[in-house]
Structures are given as structure tokens and as C-alpha cells.
Image 1 (cartoon, rainbow, N blue to C red):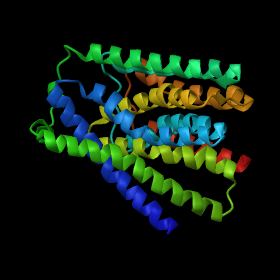
Image 2: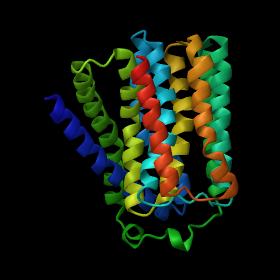
Image 3: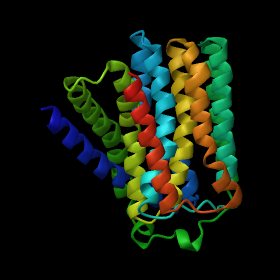
Image 4: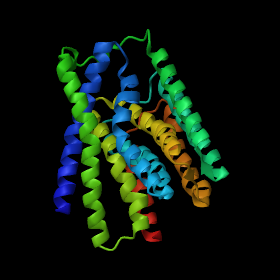
Length: 312
């Protein structure tokens, strides 16, 4: 049964990820918005749904380390795996007139804010409210900057341009619902399998839960790679990481304040920031993330997983 959960969850993630990408592209064309903005918002919100469910549930059940570890681990996986794996299929361009760099710097700033809050020992309700206000400002600013910037000719997808509104809505709904559901089944199945072969709960929490909640991002980015829409993949990762910190932890803190253990402040969150800084040279120079870089990113993530499993 556990194996069926894993297979079924993975299949649902693949189909839902493809539907979300197709629906997001069509929505961008219909609304006259840049696809990068849609990937930063609609796609990112959809793929971050599992993180929200798991983090809130963990906080309510008195497991703050799982709530925070889920976000930190997912952000690491997003940069190393969710960008690394699609780069094996298609080159990821980072040249976008500075918009990607601007959003990326905001992501790094949100990560530094999380580190500062971690050093206080708790992410309380006031901090959670501040995080949500910052997120709202970020999204409003991104929307305003997208106005007056028409969709470029090379962004036109003939299959998506004439798609009926009902089909667009159906694709988005299937993607937004299917991704968290598929992730849930895959996580539950993999958790049972991992426990049955003797992997510790700590290692499962640091790797399997975080990886599982990043699978929607990975699925959506791989679908974008197959369709040649790597602008969606990059925007999805940046948007998801911002949402993980400001929205997921912000909402979780409003529901229940999150105590932060010293290990997160001294090791885990700094490691997350260092991982994010790997992208800085690409965005500053405009160099593409190609296959070699993709291999390196995936290997870094495998090394991270190996270290966590070996240490637990």
C-alpha cells in the first residue's frame, strides 16, 4: 500500500504540475501580464500549499522544529534540486531586465529577516503579522512593475493564447488541488517505507518531509522545462522561497508562536542563506544555469541529504 501511495502521488504530481504550468501561461496571456509574474504568484502559491498544511499542523501539534525545518529544508531543496534537475533538461536563462535579480534580493532579505528572528528565540504573532505585511507589499510591487510591460513575442504560446477561460480555470484548479494532494500521498507512503528500513525520525523530518513538500515545485519546474518555459521555473523557485518564509511561517506564527531552537539560528538557517547565495553570480552576470551547473546543484543536494542521514 505504501508503494502504491508513492507511485500514485508521484503520478498526480507530474500531471498536476503540467496542468498548473499550462494554466498559468494561458492566464498570463489572457490578462496581459508577464508569465514571470504569474509564476511568482499563482504557480508559487500552488506549489507552496503542502508547506503551509504541514507547518500549521506541526505547530498545532507542538512540533515547532518540524514546522521550521520544513520551510528551511524546502528552501534548500528548491534552490539545489528544483533548479538543478530542470537545468539537466533545458538551460535556465537569468536575463530578465533585472526583475529576477530584484525578486531574488528580496528573497535573500527575507532569509536574513528569518535569521534575525531566529536569534530572538521565537517567531511570535507580531513577527508573523509583520512578515505577512512585507509579503503583501512585495506582491503589490511586483504587480505594479508588471503593468505596462507587455508580453514579449517570444513568450507567446499558440496553444495557450486561444485557450477558453473555462479550460484555463480547470487546469489551474486541477494543478492547485492536485499538487498538495499528490505530495501528501507521496510523503505518507515514503515515510512508512523509510521507517521500515530503519531511518531515524529526525533524518526523515529533515529530508523526506522537506523534499516531499518541495515535490510540487519540482514537478511544476520539470513541466516548465519540458515545455521550454524556464522563466516559470526560476520565478517558481524565488516565489516559493519568499512564500515559504513570509507566508507559511507568518501564518503559522499567527496560529501558534514558533519557538526556535539554537541549531536553526546557528546552522540550518545560515546554511539556507548560503545555498541561496549560490544563485547570485548567475543573476548578477546574466549567465545561464546550464547542464553542468544543474549537475553540481543536484550533487550538492545529494551531499546535503547524505550528511543529514549519516548524522542521524
